[in-house]
Length: 98
Image (cartoon, rainbow, N blue to C red; front, side, top):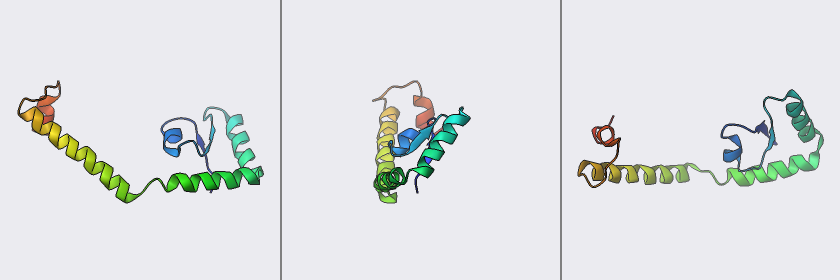
């Protein structure tokens, strides 16, 4: 489905540039962006094509793998801080789990 979103927050980053964006503080821009997508069937098809391609880049398997990579790295950092190999202003909090 062709999608329009505000050009703020994390939406442009997450969408990878395959959506149509509007200025959320401008009623005119919101209306013009929605109207353009509703009236342009070629644009709709292109947005669907790009959106499906972008969506294929996300999966639960990839999410789990990337989460494990981060958590494994954190475990190593926590162990290094506990042994004094790594120093940080947050060392006490991280080692104690707070």
